[in-house]
Length: 315
Image: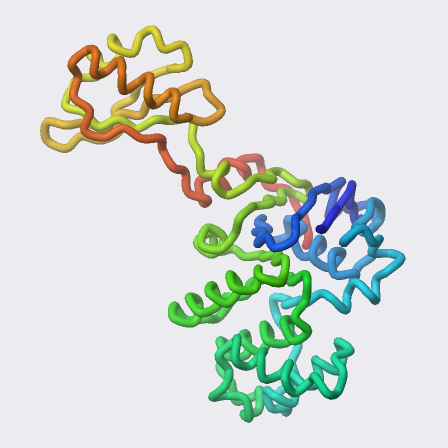
């Protein structure tokens, strides 16, 4: 369990992170989203114990990061956006060195390297100098060093950066499999990656937590979509006594059928409201070709959260 309370970080008069609080349960994959400079990297560095908070605290499994930094970091893995590597070293030598730095016992390092190489699909490049690898393969090496100690908490900054479509799918599968023994915090600009892998989303805007929601709740909408051959006036009349219905808007037409958006005052459209609409349309003998809540994509939600004017900020 990760518990973050009132976390802030100041650089002189500038506030990079302001009073951020959240909890993350074990075994979750959480997406950390925000524009460049929103404060994501600062939060990740504080979670890793690399950066001291100006105020607030971080507790992991009940232990305070300030008091137990070294012990907690031994159970964490971190992939920065530009992972540091040693170009002259081979992949296996670098991973062995990373395992040493993480305190892996000498008699267990070889197996740790073998597992990390296998999980990141680096077998064919294991004996190659890192300098000879493509950007995508170097990214895999970065992930391999992050998981070399089978960490309880894994923080990944842009893990699919530089990968081709096939490698991205492999990385998705890898990250998803890691939840069996790791809590994963994933920072990325690619909304599809969050949608494909994450249970929950934290959105950071100008250093503050603007949104904290499960992905399923986030995608729910206040709109119901109806496809019918009936006219707007007929539908409006049939649904006139539904108090939660605000208005009906035609959004698409295909021959004799139209798709209507039924906008509501509900926090999100639920099954009960869908049933009420269906029943009233049937009672009015109006055909229903399709009726379902609108599913918002993550990009739409991100735009909504960030509609405020941009101001200068830093990571």
